[in-house]
Length: 230
Image 1: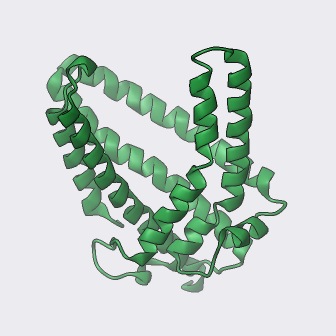
Image 2: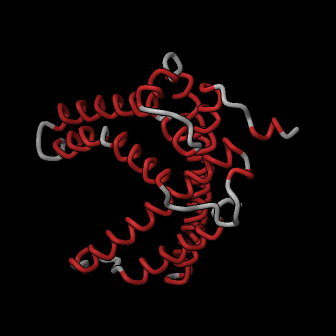
């Protein structure tokens, strides 16, 4: 399993965060906020490395990288993270508009927020091929991704929307059941919930990563490594 030890690391970090940070927002201090920020940065870096590794296995096969951990923070991962930050900057206008809707002219700002979010989805999908390409060390750029996805937006949108709906139903059911168990068991139940929710959440993310790798392989014409071994 690619990056399996890091699933456990995510669980450990989540449990430590739960034990260190107060549940009551009124009790949160500046120190707590700093700790939470540091943990978020660490988790983001680990998750980036895991996503890159999963893209590589999907696109290049298990022989692409050796070792049980298969994860690192090389220039490849930093390029991937850079593209992630660049693409997700498109969410900023939508977030600003939605925040403004809370302070007045809610309808106007809300509509602008929806329009900005729709634009982000369109542009984000069109540029999304840079992620699997970067992970696989294939030559790429935002312009290349835009060209590869030309005429394919609606098919990509349908694939990821259907996938999101299926995962929402499945994972909502699982989380609901785990939530009931957590409430019944108190603090111990909350820790048990974290232990199960983190791997489940990561699994959902990796399903999306695999789907994106598949779309990239189709649009770019790169062969399936599994098919080559048959």
